[in-house]
Length: 332
Image (cartoon, rainbow, N blue to C red; front, side, top):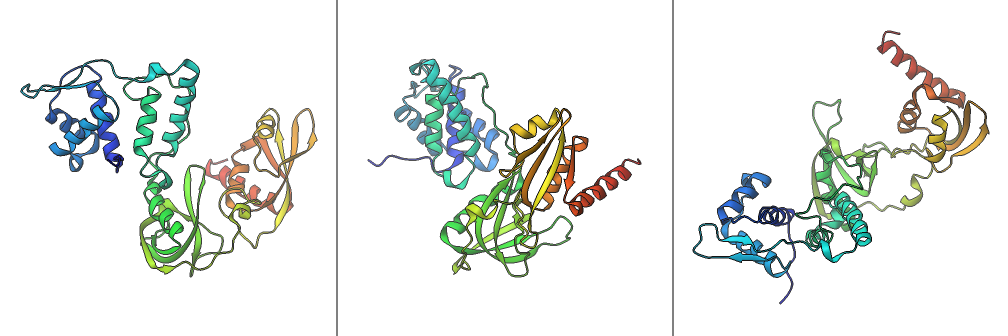
């Protein structure tokens, strides 16, 4: 018989919910499970009796849960023993597995991992994550409330299929959205936000579509993408962030950073082109080969009084104007 897979994230959440209840070594009815799942997943996702039967059978037969059932009991389901595969792993293996689980959770929302919910669940069980509280030893930065995440899968699918999409895009300053017919080429993450790179008529060349400003996406499977010869692996080699303005040439920038902040910049480079050209008792001078954009400006301003752009002069003046505007904001 062909092995079943977890077809939806809801199924994964139901199994975890049911397992966590049974792990308390109490008895439950199907209605208890249904209400718990409804509370966790919402009224529209309350599971049917047939669905719950399937979930319980899967826990018993595929995951080896010690699930007992007594038909005439008003609460006929319970675990007859503690259920965890954690003890089969030695300490070192368990630590590595838990770190891997944390990483899997970090990327589980990405479209290329759709349909692998059963793999995640089994791996979590083997690492002792489901139904067993472990000390947190690895934590990744993740913005789970980012509204653009829901567009990742349809855009990813369109890029893989090579078809165009209709995008309703609304800038934060616009009262109404504008519709664009887009040839999508690349999804890129920067600073916990996602961006779509592609081509659209009446759109700015090199400017990405931030996913959090998209109101709707509709695939056009019968309309092929405009040919794209961009080497995306090299496209952002000379920029910070996601905006590559071709009209802005690659420039040599000299950034002076005061100690001890300079040590952080040295160990976590602002860009791969970073080089140290001067060391003193009070500061380090770094050089970069970059195209100017707003993301780079924001990074430099983010250093506050610890950094100063020495050259080129026109970029230095642009930053000075921003600093003056900020000072006026604080009535300085």
